[in-house]
Amino acid sequence: MNDYKTRMDTYRQEVEAYLNGCFTDASLPQKTVLDAMRYSLLAGGKRIRPVLLLEFCRLCGRDYHTALPFAAAIEMVHTYSLIHDDLPCMDNDDYRRGRLTNHKVFGEAMAVLAGDALLTAAFDTAAHADAEPSTVVKVLGILADAAGEKGMVGGQVLDLEGENANLRADDVYTIHMLKTSKLIEAACCMGAAAGGANDEQMQAARVYAQALGLAFQVRDDMLDVLGDAAKMGKATGMDTNKSTFVSLYGVGECSRIIEQQTARAVDALACFDDRDFLTQTAKMLAFREY
Image (cartoon, rainbow, N blue to C red; front, top):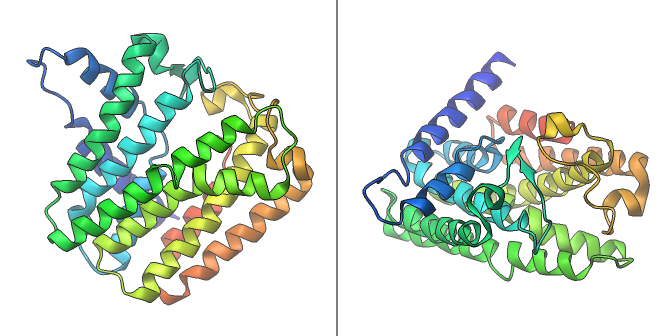
């Protein structure tokens, strides 16, 4: 466990240090948007996506430090999505990670622009990574596919259109495979690509991420009902107008789904000898309290 914590802390600290070096030019006249970007980007969080990216890079045989720009890029995309999700026209949340949401501090228009800028900066950051051009192109393609209309944005569209509707189980699965799992899948596959993965390793990364992402979302739905707002740093009970895994299956069945998908994620790692870190990460996320 100590080895696990040490590696997790190391990854998080290195990602945090890299992100802290971004958007720091105080001489620019558009400094307000940089402040808004940094406000949300440096607000903490689990940093799970960049951690997964770095670990898959390491497992596939390359120095994970070379993938730090890619890890920063995935976190920028994730942060942009949170800023926009919190807007009054979306989920209309006042708090994120225990403090006021971006639009509550900088105003709605600046929050929109900060999200737009972070999305753009993600691709700029990844494009300037010190990696083979073919690797950079592959990583950028994975990120673009996951972030846009075929992935996270598409999932958000379906989520909005599904409000106040009695959705079928297949519809809820589709929403969250796009909205949540796609970016987790991108993180794992970007890391594998950065590490020079072969086809078997890339497929393992993909299956692990899909199962992990589904378990993550089911647990998220449970926490919206059962979670402690103080621990979570945001309001609970926000999904009462949506069809969720909890409303479809109930808490007991959701727990079973989480166990099933976590086991599927762990099984997907069979081609890797050193898989303890990813195994423990899957189990930690499955039973998290925030």
